Image 1: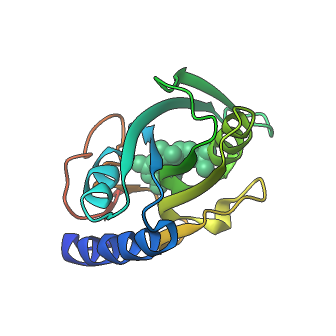
Image 2: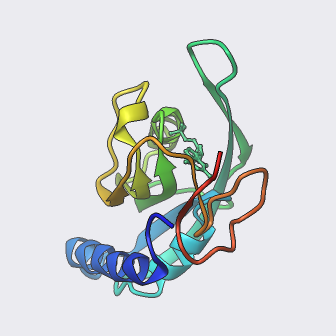
Length: 166
Ligand code: 5GP
């Protein structure tokens, strides 16, 4: 186990307090990046005190063997975000390709602001300079599962964050 569910719950509450203080009573559109963020999103949103709208977006990344990984949209938002304060909710920022793609793509739709909250950050693996505004935990270069994160679609339901055994 890398991070216990008790530590996760404590940290998610802290993030929600910080985010709530910064948005005040401004309505926020939370955009969860499927599928890995679904548990983080569900926990975070219940501790936020600002008015929220919930959206989900889906991406697929092809890192392959080439140096320039590509990101593709698999599910788009249901409604426009023009003039809205958007908070992207990510499970983990790894190479940074997904976050970079989503930030640029959503910025073109004219939101008032875009910020990002990432449950995890693996800065040592970055291939593109990108940073989440709020980060739950910074971790080493390990492949983690649980709390929404999968290996081959398994282990998302683990309450603790675990390192996948080799
Ligand atoms: P990126 O490399 O574009 O920053 O991250 C793309 C996606 O790869 C993440 O949203 C996440 O779903 C997946 N990913 C990256 N690192 C890990 C990890 O350690 N464990 C799991 N389960 N998924 C990861």
